Image 1 (cartoon, rainbow, N blue to C red):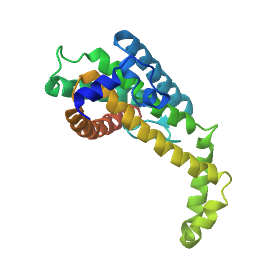
Image 2 (tube, rainbow, N blue to C red; image 1 turned 180 degrees about the vertical axis):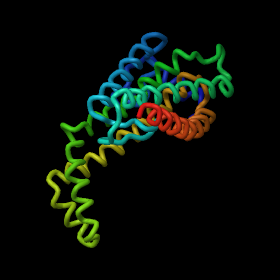
Image 3 (cartoon, helix red, strand yellow; image 1 turned 30 degrees about the horizontal axis):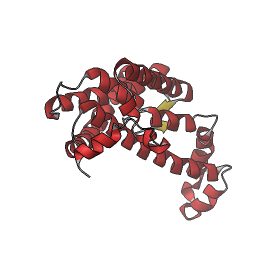
Image 4 (cartoon, rainbow, N blue to C red; image 1 turned 45 degrees about the vertical axis):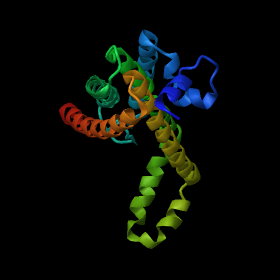
Length: 224
């Protein structure tokens, strides 16, 4: 199927299925409405980061339980959004052939919405849910260091360990959804054809991850 056919299908006016809407809701959003939803998702991510002590230490990374000041948790979530939006907006300004040129408003809004899977993953690992398993699991792993051959036996004895592994599997699925959702955010905001959009998204995601790691380290060091 050619790019024109794909674009016509994605922009068709007929009702679309639930799964299609989950991976590409951006054909139904535009301008300030997109920005409003994106800002709401980012605000929710900041709240989860601060209240749940979730480190969004990379645009495609997340850790729970590590100590830091609340402002550092909030800064990480905001930096991830700003970096990925600015980077892809800049890339689109260079590589997109659409007229008029892509708008910053669309990138900040759509890539704000693109943070939704990471918001949901953060909720999943807050202390009152799966995050509460991290303490007992860490204690078990430390105590099992002297008996590495008994590691699996010790792990299976941790209360709720089944939920922990189920949560890991669910988190991987959520992150995969995040990749797909963000790809369509970049494609729709930039107006690029599928081939160039894939290349820009692949390279841009790697660069954004590196840039966010550096920015997060700088923030943590500054706020200690």
